[in-house]
Image 1 (cartoon, rainbow, N blue to C red):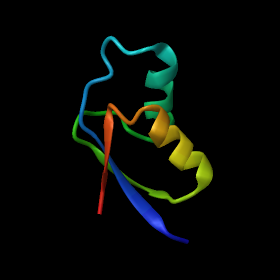
Image 2 (image 1 turned 120 degrees about the horizontal axis):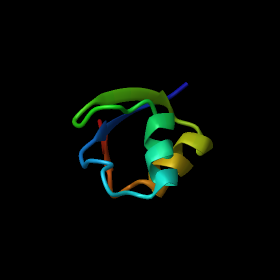
Image 3 (image 1 turned 90 degrees about the vertical axis):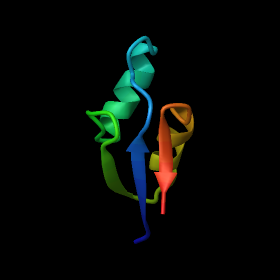
Image 4 (image 1 turned 180 degrees about the vertical axis):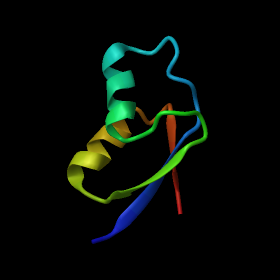
Length: 58
């Protein structure tokens, strides 16, 4: 299965609680942390919801 890398580039301080929970659901806890996730529609939806906080890496 294809994998994607996601990096948290902006702090979750002051965000909506649902967006903070989405970032945690992606496995991101610290600023500039990178995680590798399966490229599924569910993960893509989570990324699009918090696109202003995260960045996709190649």
